[in-house]
Length: 86
Image 1: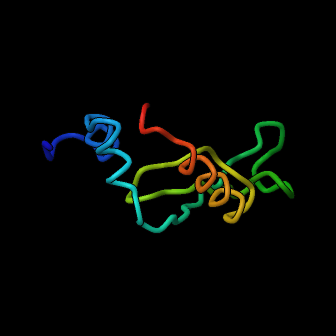
Image 2: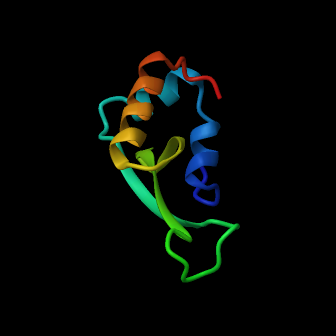
């Protein structure tokens, strides 16, 4: 794989079987990010919320969730049924 491609672009270039093998038996971790509620002003209570998404080997799995456990559970469920197709 070329080093000029992003991690996801490299992942997308793999075959479905290679994608499954690439993620297999690696831990699911989470990253977090703050999101600004567009209906509130900066500094207002609840204006910024922290959301979490799951990653396996740097590849995002699923969307953003209010809690790390929810992101991990959703990723685990997705990966159990996933056939490797994008």
